[in-house]
Every structure is written in C-alpha cells, then in structure tokens.
Image 1 (cartoon, rainbow, N blue to C red):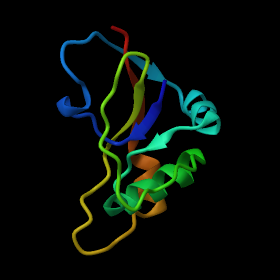
Image 2: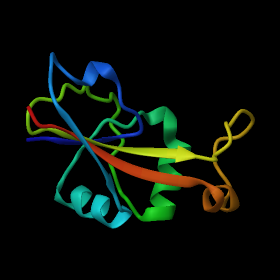
Image 3: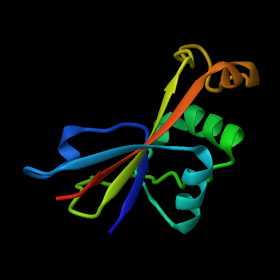
Image 4: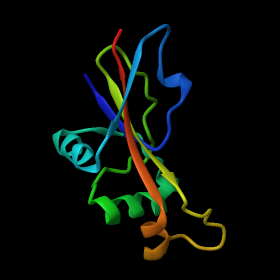
Length: 114
C-alpha cells in the first residue's frame, strides 16, 4: 500500500473500474502521514506552491526530479493539496507571506477500496 502526495488528481491515476473513497484531512493528519512516508508526485515547476506549503504547514515533502507516473491499486491512496487564492506567478517566482496567509488550503485523501 503506497500513499502518494501531490497537488492534482488525474483520471489516469486509476486503473480500470474501482471504488474510490475521498476524505478530508486536517493539516496535522497530513503531517503524520508525511512523517510515516509518502511518495511525492510533486512537479518541480510548482516550487512556489511547495514553498508556501512548507512555510504554512511545515510539511517537508521531497520534490522529485522526475515525478513518478502514479497508478493507484487497491489499498493505495493519494493525498491532494488544493489551493485557492494564490495568484498566478507571471512576473516573479515566489508568493509573499501576505498572499500565502490569505490563500485557502485543503487536503483530501483519495483511496482505492476495490
């Protein structure tokens, strides 16, 4: 059973017909799961969002050079951090502390049950 961590969910993560359980997680629960070990599927190009996650929640998730192709089987799950309220970075590479403080972060775990 593998737990992945990323910022998005894609249909291609699920192989064939399956049942998926979605549950909301508190940041503390995510921190516990990260401490137990997750496989990161973060994209290095999202370094500003990763930095915001680290500063806001203290979550230290590795950034793989090449993110893995995620295929979830029964018992596997992916924790997805969704963010609302951060502006697109078109002329700079980092968010301000004020922008991070105003943004809404939500964590959900999607598990394949059968």
